[in-house]
Length: 336
View: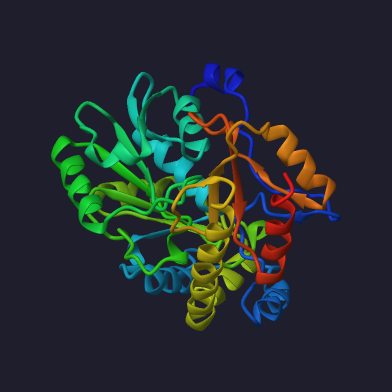
């Protein structure tokens, strides 16, 4: 990490409200968690009086089954962002150029800058057509945040091929891919996949995730990984969650149905972006974004100010929550 950059690079804004009086549509986390996970977490407390297993074989096996890769390719991390940081740390040197989509997760450009790199921004819908030549790293968010756009599997695989041919590492952030039935790129040569358990399983405070990589870069990630970097309760709870196939299937169906219903209702007043993710981005037009957010807050809702994303100046993002909660959101937004 570049010491000068650390002093100069600021923080990125994020969704999530810690106000218990507000219904939080600003963070894209599942409002439900798998049945039984609390008991698993509590049972893991006693084991947490000792160091967790190193390496955490059971967690790696659960993750490998979850994304269909070899357990040896799994690198446990305390959340998906930790996987992103470690990848950038190993792939990017001072002065290196990195292909970064926009609008997209602000932490990509921040991490590149922290490590002395130079983000080369590309519109998110054009990223798979970009030339990876002369870039140390290319980043793709699938589905993209905040637009919700998921990429065609064939086009993404073709881009991975071009990155390999150019000698460019490809980082694919699949934080929201579990909400879809699309295949993961985990285990693909030359590709690092970052996965988070935050979103799909509704446990952002757990800080559990993993990277998947192959070849020499896998060895580098494993070598750079600190021992015991994921706590025992996170390993136990995360491993349990990844085995809950019925919960995943029910969540996908609920999100798909509710997202379609919400989009149809919102489209009566706003320009809504098609989404494959558990959130919707919409343009409020000539309305003042701050006024829309304030009006929603007065009615007990926290929405995400999407103008903080590069290239957006009149947008709001809302999570897809439970049906009765979504009804409340739609009622409030009819009045702004």
